[in-house]
Picture 1 (tube, rainbow, N blue to C red):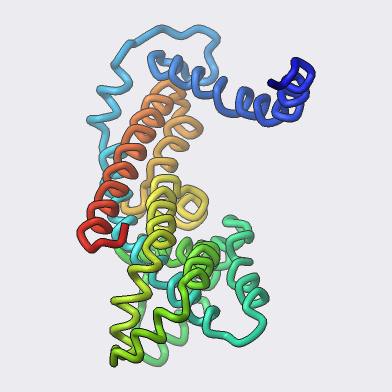
Picture 2: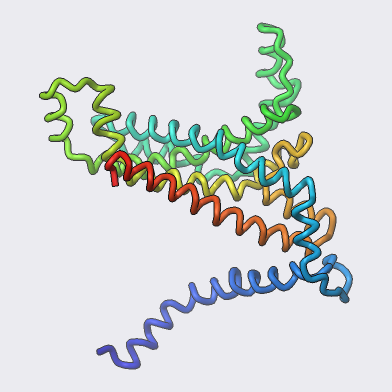
Length: 293
């Protein structure tokens, strides 16, 4: 049995993380729940309790409703895009004879890049007088307002974030590919199974745990998008890219409705938890139906 001094030493080493959790998670969470039932405007020293009024107003507000639907539109575009991109990167790198780690680091670097910087670069590339748009207008007669139409704006944001996360997810998928026993492919080849059939009947089933992880992570990302939207579209046009985080920011720091924004944040947390849980259960059912898990 461990003595008291060992327990104290353990608490000492764990204290930085515990303090971090207390200061930056637990206290803000309790404070946010408290504010959600008030009408505090971030300025006035006095405020009153409005009970569930903020929650009722939020559920009826067009901004909150758009954030709900935009999240799932973004999920429908981003998740397949980043999954396909990361799988292609992983398979390409896994097939290299040498320098796999070097190439993986290269693909991983966008994940470390600042979202603000990458968004500003993309905004410049897609500006009206950029070389890209001048080429499209001069060669094909296409005059595309990339950030001014609902679908293209959502697509641009999805592409940027998929570019950022594909290298990170490729690391996970590459580890999954490396764990597949090569003898399985040799046995499949002896049985006359071609490359395409090997991919669907061997690679995907054996890669299911890694795919499961990347899919859940990518779904979680869709509920927390803010930087790219804030820099590129500000939630527009016409709420087309108005995510949960953008709506919370607008209500708290533009409209100065801290109580209302806290209520929106709590609603967002519930939607995020339920959304990820449902998606996780669907993946588990899919895996069990095919005998992968």
